[in-house]
Amino acid sequence: GDSVTQMEGPVTLSEEAFLTINCTYTATGYPSLFWYVQYPGEGLQLLLKATKADDKGSNKGFEATYRKETTSFHLEKGSVQVSDSAVYFCALSEGYNQGGKLIFGQGTELSVKP
Amino acid sequence: DAGVTQSPTHLIKTRGQQVTLRCSPKSGHDTVSWYQQALGQGPQFIFQYYEEEERQRGNFPDRFSGHQFPNYSSELNVNALLLGDSALYLCASSGIRDSTSHEQFFGPGTRLTVL
Image (cartoon, rainbow over the protein chains, first blue to last red):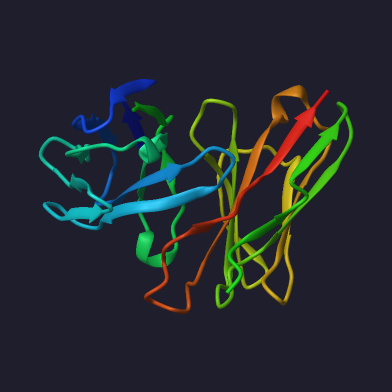
């Protein structure tokens, strides 16, 4: 079945460092891909998405490109801030346009130190 | 505009008991999905309700059941609780009728502890 694998955390960075969180997926069709963020004590928030190959999702300085050839959707940010400390989840959905279920990776905890 | 709301926030039960969790979707949404998030793990899809019927189901036993009401709110019921049911239960709503609103908006979750 479909699955998502993320790099394990926790990831600890200094403020203004470059961030990469790796995500690869396995899917039978052509899924939509997502990054969600979960701040302490809160629910999940959609950070960015890409619905077809070569699309780049971006939001709040974060970017990820849908790479079909490598089945990857790595999250990047050029300069992290303390406020970016959270858990990041990569996810896919086979039937996004029909409200399809989300399949999540295990999450990567990011801690940014001042 | 209120987002997705869930109640209660926290719940403590003992093994063998039954529990009901509640979710009100974001205004204008007609579809509710439920996810279980064990500590340190990603959310896992339980099921989805649309037009008061279960539309999709994940790999969860029949002890997990749900309901959707005419006002689109939803309940998740878990019978015969096991220690392994301890988790954060997340509700997400989306709008199937509105083709621009497929994004799933998540509530803050209900933290269930089974002792």
